[in-house]
Image 1: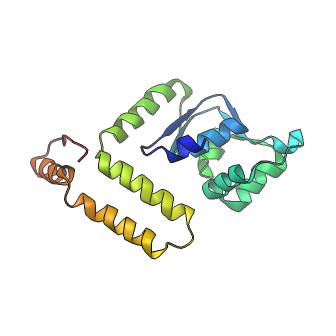
Image 2: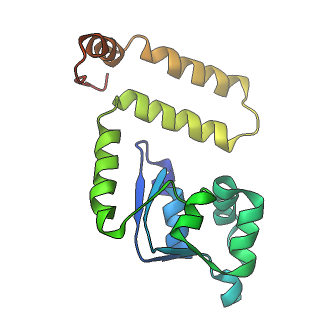
Image 3: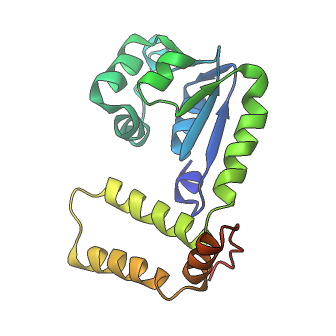
Length: 173
C-alpha cells in the first residue's frame, strides 16, 4: 500500500463488484477511483472483531472525513456505488459495462498531461495533505519545485502548443 501511496505518478483504482476491507483501503490509496454502478464498498472490521490499523484509518479520515469513517467502521454496512460517490469515497460511477473503457480513457487523459506537472503536483498535494504546517525548509522545497518548471522545456512546449492549438509533445524535462 505504501508503495502505491509513494508512487510519483497518478494512480487509478477501477472498482467492480465487491470492494471490501483491505481492497477498499487499497482503492482509497490510489489518487483517483472510478467505480462500476452496482459495486458495493465497505469495511467489515466491526463484523469480524477487528480493530483496524491506525494508518488505514487515517486514510479513510483523509478521504471521507470523521462522520463517514465512523459510519463505515462502526456499522460495517456496505455502501452502494452511488452513495460512495456522494460521500467522496469514489470520484466517478459509470455503467459496469463501461468501467474498463472509462478507466483506460481516464488513464490516457492523465497520461497526455505534462509529466513534470503530474509528478510535481502530486508531490505537493500529498505533502500539503500530510502536514498541518510546513517547515521553512519544506516550504522552500515547494517553492523551488514550482520555480523549476519555469525553466523546463515542457513549459515552453506547453505554451507553444497552446498558442498553435495543437497537442504538446512532452519531453519530461
